[in-house]
Image (cartoon, rainbow, N blue to C red; front, side):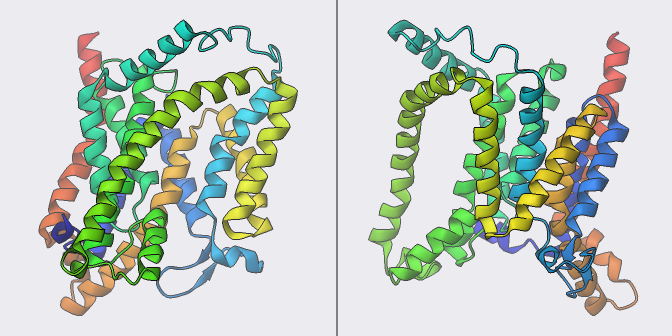
Amino acid sequence: MAKIALKFGPPEYFWVSIFGLTIIAGLSGDSLLKGIAGGILGLLISTIGIAPVGGDVRFTFGISSFQGGVELISVLIGFFCIPEVFKMARNPVGSYLKNTSVGSTVEGYKEAIFKGFRNAFADVVNLIRSSIIGLFVGILPGAGGNISNLIAYNEVKRASKNPESFGKGNPQGIVATETADKATIMGSFVPLLTLGVPGSPVAAVVYGALMIQGLNPGPELFTKHAEITYTFMTSFFVATALTVLIGMFAGVLFYQIIMRLPIRVLVPGILLLTIVGSYAVRNNFMDVIFMLGSGYLGYVLGKLGFSPGPVVLGLVLGPIAEKGLVQGYLMGNSISPGMPWVIFFTRPISIVLIVISLISALWPFYSARRRRRAA
């Protein structure tokens, strides 16, 4: 897997981003045109700040805080959390959850646990597919779980016999995104331990911890420090088991506490946490402004029928696509000055990614035609 990761250059990263953008159709809701418009909006927002190649300052309006670009976490909180808070504030009817019996007794607790396990393992193919997607994306340094969970969600929705149920309570969407996200974290340790390249923020933290202990990530970890390395890798299994136990016993408890809180307490509490979380990422108050602004924008777009998924997808993939495109063009120009674009269409992995992207882009039209025939 490390050898495969080494074969990925700027052209391959560009086509991975293009493949990611093709799943906009699956995240668009009822209107493909609105999904494409949302993806373009996300791409435009991603261009704020200093260009990843060349260092040009763009769309900062003379504000120095904008030079660092848009903090992804702040925008994610804004688009996905703030609109829901607005909805809660506008409709505070039923401040207390009437049906709070689930988990309040031993029988109810067991029922909740068994229901969770049934939902998780109801579709084993979804689990395996989402794990492979997360692992593959995690191996690619810089891609991250924000891409893998959206791709996994789109794939389980596309493979489902009832795709219209996603976004309306289908638990397989949660299973796909969470499985892919956790697999991405594990996948990011492949380039870290074998090449010394941290592929995610979590891997970067572990990288620093290893350096403090005098361990240099790379091939020598498996030769000079094998006993520490394999103990370190085995600890992942222990951590996963503890996560399951904590989720089983503490999850239902916190669920009960939160569901019994009145809306007048939940709304300001959630808003406080969003502000603290947005500010804590970079200790930049402008990130809080971005979060609130994107939250209001997400609420307005939701009223107009736009889904936040394509906007966030464009924001996540924009810098990766731009960097891959510019660096790939420079590579192609150095190899064949007269035809720099050839490099994007001649490398083996790029060709495979182009084919996959075409299939992904044309699949919604094929599915719509098949449904019309069945009708």
